[in-house]
Length: 207
Image (cartoon, rainbow, N blue to C red; front, side):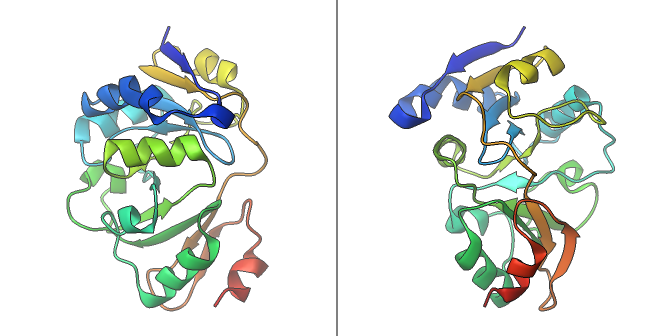
């Protein structure tokens, strides 16, 4: 069974994440709460760490992994933002909107599923942002569940589904609801990939 650390988001101390950072730097996988559901964090620059995420989920390696960043500056270390994408990020972050744009070099090929773009967002959840900030780079953000099973907001359900996980950050139940909306902003014309927590109509109304 995975190790577990419990953190109260209302009394959050970033030093509580030290063990999680050690796991990530060691190529491990950490489950953590976001502003929607629980996600799986790994180093997206490490082919071995990315492979471990896919193995835990039983997910085909033809599916790219999305990322979570502490802020827009960190996001730009992993992806190139056009003026349109940057404006969308400024309007919608922090929040449940994943912006897909051209990936920078350094990300593992496996994380991109052989493609040239990457999806990244800044969540409205202190623990998720602090984890990426303390790690020093974006972390993966795929949902913490077996492939084909529903994602969860319940930390206990994460452990039941993924008993071989390296570490769970138990921040209590995540807010739940739909996953993030995913928008392709690699060009000046936005394209909806998945509608989720942010309505597509709201995205189109953004500057």
